[in-house]
Image (tube, rainbow, N blue to C red; front, top):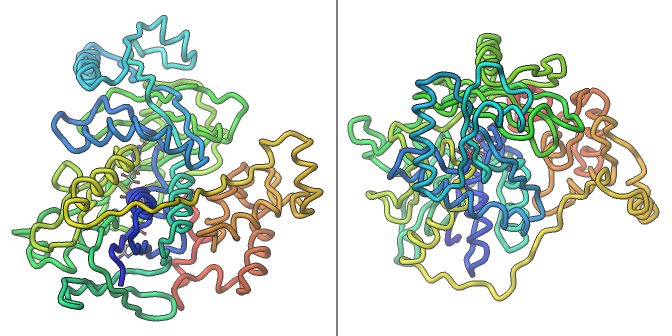
Length: 494
Ligand SMILES: Cc1cc2nc3c(=O)[nH]c(=O)nc-3n(C[C@H](O)[C@H](O)[C@H](O)COP(=O)(O)OP(=O)(O)OC[C@H]3O[C@@H](n4cnc5c(N)ncnc54)[C@H](O)[C@@H]3O)c2cc1C
């Protein structure tokens, strides 16, 4: 019997798992996919927003501002990269300048650092700004992370501190029950080996685009369109990824002035020196559809030309899309369900959900769980070791690694300079990789300009050898379900 079972190993669920694992609790973290961070957390703009633009009085405002304050220290503790690269919001007309005035005042009211730049100052900082930009806000507290690296690191720490991780567990039903005279839940999940059931006192529903359906499993009110608390419609965003350069085109994130559709089409310099260009914002009926379309990509290209010029589209190595879990509440839903005690909703977590995740976790633990259960801190907390990254080591350190383990001398990915030793580490770490995509997310083979053309067969061979599976078993999540094969058949992700 678990004290708390978390559904969804995205950034929301993994922050909660890691933070809850610091207490004397029995925690389970479940995801339907074969790895951590396969939903919105894998496919987004990777920005730790400053908190200047959520509507006043919303949960988005509260948790965005607090999340931004928390991220840098947490990333340092976890040993993952965080860069406070700053951002410009670029205006191209008098009407947009009026919106900048409002955003500037909001930033000041929230103690978010902000400065106003004229065209000359903008061009001095970002020479590739488009010729029609006339005015900008600079938001120096804006940062970037690699979202899946953070979620994986959080999970590793959760697992090291006793959390049970259940991947390939697709929750298909939840029943309320009573065990030893106390309320509990039976959580039914489909796995490759068949149906399984876990028991728990409390559930945290952090299931992204499926959070409304998961809630409907336990709530009659939620099943009825007339009385439901919220519904989620996926809102797709599509991107270009430009190959990494020693010095990317822009140093800061360049936002356009936001509209009713959201933050608009941006340029983001990533932690690994790629450029992300996107996203569009289109509602979508299908919660699994992460395809990219020529129409959306053409829109992204047209829109970005308004704020940034000289984008090297000939160096694009990939396109991908992500689905925002957009709620009809127009705000996050973070509460204990009114009709189901012990069932906690962390739902409708669209942007700025990545930024807000540490603050949401802090709120759920301190404001929702602490008043109703005994949270006893563990005497000792285990810390994870950072991912090994030989390309950032000196030649002396590199040679030392090879002399200790010759696997660090066998190059697997030429584009990203990744060795067999690093792939083996990615497999054998806590919550280690079980798929090609899992390896790619932990140590980056396949992220370079050949997109896995050279390394994918080698990584497949290593994974099969280490896990004792056939290539078919490696690729198929559920028996007979070739379409959902991970890695190779999902070209639009990561
Ligand atoms: C295009 C785009 C751009 C964005 N840009 C930013 C940004 O720059 N900054 C920012 O702060 N935010 C951004 N966001 C928002 C941010 O990505 C999300 O708010 C955040 O990732 C949501 O995390 P989550 O853990 O709540 O959901 P998810 O990451 O979607 O995780 C939910 C998990 O639940 C699992 N799951 C679902 N159903 C079941 C089931 N039945 N059984 C078991 N498991 C299940 C899924 O597999 C998934 O892993 C963006 C989002 C998108 C899509």
